Image (cartoon, rainbow over all chains, first blue to last red; front, top):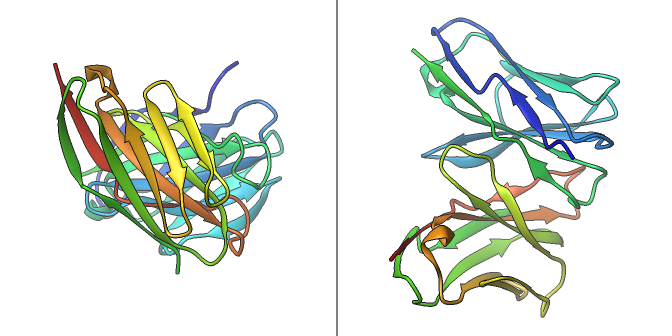
Length: 113
Length: 112
């Protein structure tokens, strides 16, 4: 059974650019959540999508956005990159709403220079 | 606001030396408390979910327990392969969807 797939694994961008990260959930999972992980702040919730609708959003600026497609694949976009956006971005998928089967991908390591 | 605090931040153990990790939480109605293991450069790997005070779950050398204010992850006779960062997270009944609030983690190093 394939796990959660995140692409790309590594990314280097320049300050001011924008970036799009992709997440393919486990087959049959309709919920996709995104997290930012940094050494200083730990794992912080960005947003969650369920059946193409954003169901919850964390305390991040509007430069961080996401979307989910009809096949449950999700993308997140960060515009006008700042040095502080350098982090490991993690995606997690789940069949429903109760946290059961909440499975993380390996993440995308974004470095902003 | 939901809060999770893990202690200690780091733990160095000799192989076979049992120990416990603490996760203290404040949440507006607990739906579930989760334990994950994370290896460097990888995503968190699910270990346990606990739903109510008094509940216990075991997996190999790991045992998780839950009270109304905290959870413990006991590592019995650890091996070097148990070295990892252990993360605790809570899900609130008041939060829409699958939002988890994580603690800062405990880095565990088991030396042979």
